[in-house]
Amino acid sequence: MRLKPRIAVFADFDDTLTTQNVARFLLKRFAPEALDRYSGLYRAGEITFREYQELSFNAVRLPVTHMQDAAAEEIELRSGINELLAAVEEVGGTFTIASAGLRFYIEPVLKRHGLEEIDVVCGTATRGESDSEPFRYDYPFGETGDDSNEERCRGDWATCKCKALEQAGEDAVTVFVGDGSTSDACVAPKADFVFARDRLLRICNEQGIAATPFEDFTPVTEFVTKLSAASKA
Ligand SMILES: [Zn+2]
Image 1 (spheres, protein in one colour):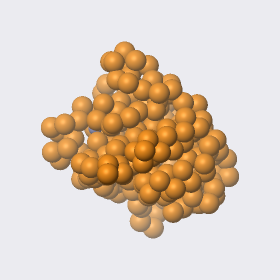
Image 2 (image 1 turned 45 degrees about the vertical axis):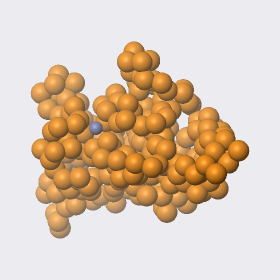
Image 3 (image 1 turned 60 degrees about the vertical axis):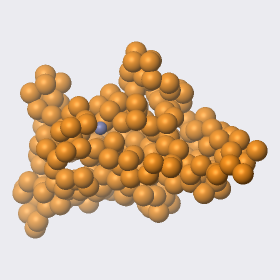
């Protein structure tokens, strides 16, 4: 008897679970000048992704609840997510969101769509009494400079998705679903199976990383169901 593999699906949040980049949507609305300035510095290679994100959100001088309400009201999820979650549960697998973004805007979006039970690996931003204070940022695998970022990862991604993937354990069959060119491209070669769109798909194609294109979650759902059925045969 062949042992049934444990399927661990990891999905990026911004532009993958959601149909747009929520961090950018919020910054465009609540701190457009900071977004322009810091995204320019980031593109020029003068600051890291983590610094871009931290500095930009620090420029938002309104209560966090304003951003949370806007995200909950306006952000849509990519279609097929409920079917994917059901398929993963059916085969006894796990589904985890691995995001370089921040919990304060991820959770209200999930809650609005009834998905608050999903595990999320991401950073947090907390602020004291005053809305003009900078946030305090914390990341699940330590700040930049820990061994995961330094030795194995190419960049300062805020949250290291490679570490998140490792936590699934050696015996898990890992599936990564994403769209981006930074933290997603870092973790993709380490996953057993990759579903990619947009920039991540281009990078996978260029680098010879096997990846299945997706625009909604249907191909991922079909894959999870087939993989589980194949292992039972
Ligand atoms: Zn990495």
